[in-house]
Length: 345
Image 1 (tube, helix red, strand yellow):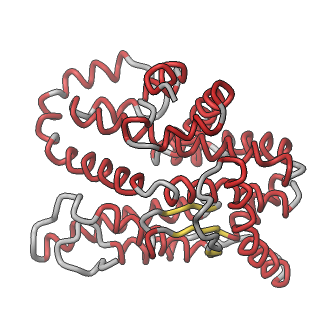
Image 2 (tube, rainbow, N blue to C red; image 1 turned 90 degrees about the horizontal axis):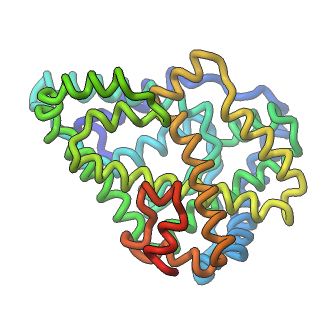
């Protein structure tokens, strides 16, 4: 990440330093227990991914690699690296000179606020744009915090989290085209935001009427109203893909679960309730950041995945990873039979 290069739309160094100052403290636990948690998380990432491979049939010929166990500060730095790589050249460039530095610095501070908020909530992630073409991260203090809050067995919860993140890694590493496709869609969407800004002003009366008359169901409605038809097509593809990725990972972690995570039913029940919880301020922030909409994606994507697998089996479900044309459309997420009819796996 060359955050200090001239012309960057976001000063990612500013984002990291802002977030680092605002990150909340992790749980207070015995140092030996902390070291044990880190060691176990690192050791079981390869075990978890092997379980995922056995269930899904994906990535059988790929090397099994351990994940990186980090604290909240480490996650922020890694997340900023990945975001910088994903958005490099896609964001509108600020003007040169001091005013441009002010704009990029302000954008960096705003990004840092978001990263600080998320740093206390992310359990793990697979970043396909991280170093060495992909990084699997597990945020140890957050895993410990949530496990303690749920009051579930520590080893079971750690394996359960690793199953989810291992699924994400396989989604991208077993299908090399997916990384470039996702990156291309994000870049096209971001580029369209700048092109469509003036057109949006001309549509303000229509947008205001729609906001007044429309009930926002999923937290994305207002964003969609501000988009042109062309940009909405890209947005729909991104929503469909992210819903599939999250829902597939949720389905797999629970399907593998009973064999290797004895308390999986309890973990799922308590974790789902926790996803819906939080105080008023937390819920408002999650909605503004799109986290609330993402929570709903897990359930919708998992329901789609389960329906298709129940109908045609795992091997035929995996046809979904063949190309962009075999990915589900947004409308098909809620109507998996439509995807089955169109693709005929």
